[in-house]
Image 1 (cartoon, one colour):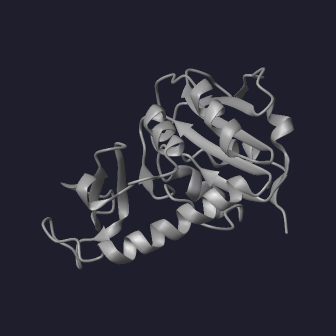
Image 2 (cartoon, helix red, strand yellow):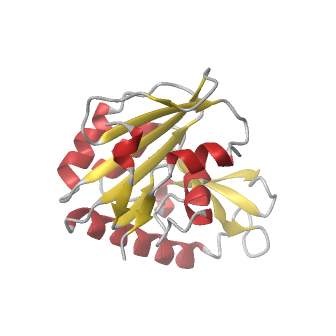
Length: 210
């Protein structure tokens, strides 16, 4: 699949990590009709995201697996809370005013919100809708086949997996992957991922179906 084939309408669009970046870029372009489970989380390892998808989010962020790391979000307003089972961290859910390192008072409301997002995503995946999944990668070259195998099994309709990775390139590079549902795009390195022109090119003519 090439980048031009990504264009078109989608019934749902979901971020698969690795940070808040896809959700931010989608939101600023009115391409985020609803929130996904890991929109505002960090998920540095694609294999761990694969395990999460394979398990259909079972036990995700459960009390027995979470750890308050002691670190704060970039804005210093939220505690970073890590799911040690899937190695995925919440960075915008537990604010420093209502929670402490030993008492996450917002946990019940956070889980209510998270479970609602999980159920919506799983419902969309099983309902025959056309879905766009997006993941950004700062470094590394994770094997994507496992992700595709999982999506092939779980998505009842059609889907596109748009995988965007920083690399030593000077312009957007479309890798023309042979898999019919996978588009791999390399982009120039940028530590803060601003690159608005780049995102405009990548998401050109992508829209949400009404």
